[in-house]
Image (cartoon, rainbow, N blue to C red; front, side, top):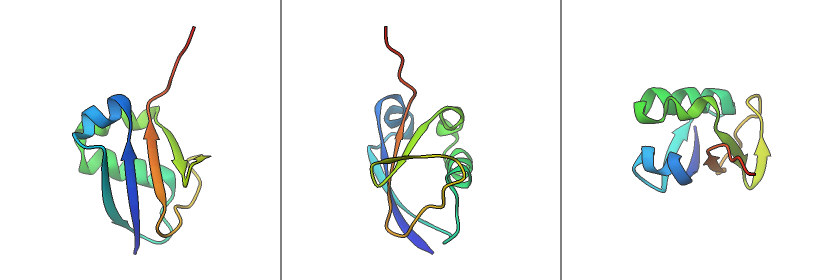
Length: 82
């Protein structure tokens, strides 16, 4: 098991009801699997996980990335500008 820290921003923070949490995950878990777990464990986050932007240790990450041990995972809603 890997211990990770999750950081929530903007509307995802509101839906999570917290700005951060720690979680134990399997050693080979991908970002996609983590998003699925968050959506299942926290139903308020399920819709947000469809379009969330994710960083691992402050670098953008895609769904197939493996979450390393002691990672800091940040979750951001998509941003639009104009």
